[in-house]
Length: 107
Image 1 (cartoon, rainbow, N blue to C red):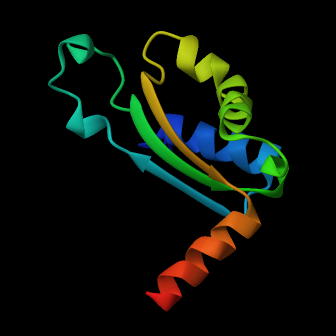
Image 2 (image 1 turned 180 degrees about the horizontal axis):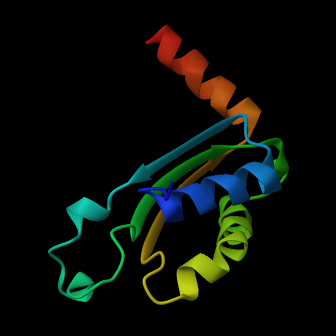
């Protein structure tokens, strides 16, 4: 049976294998952008994503380097016709995620 979210499925598989994330959240925001001029006539319903990744693979790397790692991983999906048009990233290490959780618990 064909998936209703083939692009999200590919993203999830690639990210899971490359980064072994402790946390992986992929939110498809394409429906919020369907009316944009650039999306008129688009062949895909999966074009805009917000992705949160927590992975030890990001240790000792600054945010731009982490984002480049993800962009490189998804370069084929971002460059092809009907592929990813926009990708928002939030990349964290497990320690950073832990600190965020502790701050929320104290609030």
